Image (tube, rainbow, N blue to C red; front, top):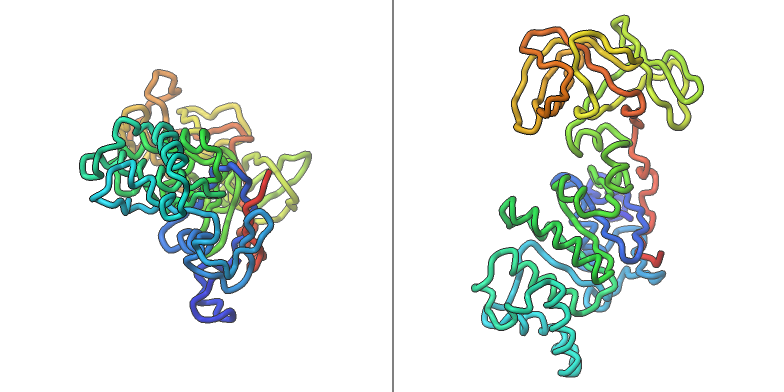
Length: 372
């Protein structure tokens, strides 16, 4: 799926350059990426507020391109709650059903059930101004869900909330989605938010989807350098593969040091590659560990973070690496600035990166919402 603002041939003006996804019914699916990456434009195309320059948007097999937003059986929740201040909570939730001329008894039953789901039954008669920000967001969610859409689109709906309330609402949203069983497509730039709530995440960058997968896969096995750096903290180590055998290779770091790396997919000896390893996977010691994946370095900085200490290490290869050591008494060493240390990790805790987004070639592919 492509979206450009200068005609189909204006590739330089394309905001969405290649999105090809299949989202399952009942899935909590997140579009994650930095500002300007195309995630909100993608959501607006699904909603019907924008039309793609090329490609399809399939909702249970039916192409939605050209279908007006109010005919798509999809609802959207925005960061601004857009509640009617003069109406009660119950009347705000019932508004869409009244417009559809749903029978009054059914409206009452559906409003009661959805207010119970979002835990606002006791607030039914209150006005929006009498509610907290989190409660207002749940009213907006209930108003969308009461219409029983096939999919609910959420554009950074928690962005206006303070950190503690946002974290609470993340768990609430996941609970509500699990109870109602409706597909949620969620846009966010917050990595922790996406990891907390999602069944699967699509990481977007510069109009492309760079990786799609469950949160653990995207975090533990990033496909590209962008994904590795955008989600959490990651260390990148460059080198040349000198040998390839039985799922393990040897990476020459260029300073006489060689480390073992896991091989997934097709790799060849002589290939220049990048390896990533997360800071919490690394053990810091003052003596070399008995492992095939280790690098020597010097501690340049250390920062106490409460549950852990963050070490910045200048390695002998020239790479700067970050190490998180837990402050629970299990750390092997507590070095100071200027100390020589060894960084080591289990070989299968590192991961070779690909050189380009996997979906870059599928520029005009479909985005589909389907039954599992």
